[in-house]
Image (cartoon, rainbow, N blue to C red):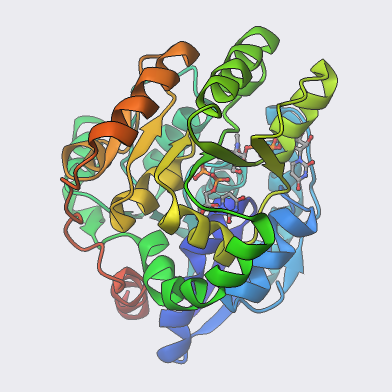
Length: 357
Ligand code: UD1
Ligand code: UDP
C-alpha cells in the first residue's frame, strides 16, 4: 500500500493534512507531491509548518501561468513521478488546476484516484473551478464527499453511487485540531493589530477582482463600511496585483494585510463580527465557527453553509455589501448548526477507506 497526495494551492494544504495524519497512524507508506501552483512563503511554506505536514517529497515547481499552461505543466512534470513511484492510490483535493491535472495523468496510467471534496457544484461553468470539479469527478475511482447533496449531484452526472462515500469535511478536521492553538495566539495578534470590533474580508475570485470596475466598486463599499466598523483585509496575491495595477489605495480604516498564516487567519475569523468573502473554504470555516458570513458571489457550490450554516449569498453587486453588513451588525442572532460529519474525524474515515482498498 502506497498513497501519493497531490497538493498545490493554499486550500489544498488544510484539506490534505488530516488525511496524511490518518494514514500515518495506520503506518501506510506515503508520498507528498507539491505542484508549486502556489509558491510564495505566505501562500504555501507557512502552511506546511503550521499544519505539521512534512516537507514535500517532490516539488514540481510549476508556478503561475494561463490555465492551459499551468495544467499542462503539472501533467508533464507529474507523469514521471507517478510512473516512478507506482502508488496504489493518488489522492487529489478540491478543485484547483493541480487537482484536475493530476487526475488526468493518473486516469491514463490506470492508477486509482481518490477525490477529496467530490460532488460540489455551483452549476456555473464560467468558474474555472467548476470545470475542474466536473472533470475530476468523472475520472475519480473513489469520490469522498463532505455533504449529502454531493452524492445526488454526482449520480445526476452518471457517477456510480458505489464509488461515492460521505466522509465529512477534512478542512474542518484541521480547524478542530488547531482552533485551540489559534485562540492562544489571539491576544498578541489582537494587540499588534489594535483590534476591537472588525469585519474580516478575503477576496480572490477572478469574477470579483480581475475586473477593474468591479474591484473599484468593492473597495468603495469597504470604505463605506469602514465608517461603522474597522475592516481587516488580508490580500491574496491575485488581488494585490490588481489593486496595485489600478492604484487603489484604501482609507486607513481599511487595513490591508499580507496573506495570513493559517493560525492567524483562523483566529481573525473566530473573532470577527462579520466575514465578507468569496472563498470556498472560508464559507465552511465560518459555518463551523458560527460567525456570520456574507459571500460576494452569484452562487455557491457549498449550499449546506447557507441551509445549515451562517452563510448568506449577497446580491451579485458590490453595493449590496453595505446594507448586508449593517443588518448583521444590528440584528445578527446565531442561527446555524454544524453540518453532519463536520466533526474532526473525516481524515481518519478516508484513511480507513484507502487502507483497505
Ligand atoms: C487558485 C485556484 C482557486 C483557489 C485559489 C486559492 C485554480 C484555477 N484556481 O486561484 O480555485 O480558490 O487558488 O487561493 O486553480 N500568485 C503569486 N504567488 C503565489 C501564487 C500566485 O504571486 O504563490 C499570483 C500570480 O500572479 C498568479 C495569480 O496569483 O498569476 C493567480 O494564481 P493562480 O494559482 O493561477 O490562481 P489563484 O487566483 O491563486
Ligand atoms: N486562509 C489563510 N490565510 C489567509 C486567507 C485564507 O490561511 O490570509 C485559509 C482559510 O482559513 C482557508 C483557506 O485558506 O483554510 C481557504 O483558501 P482560499 O480562500 O485561498 O481558497 P478557496 O477555499 O477559495 O479555494
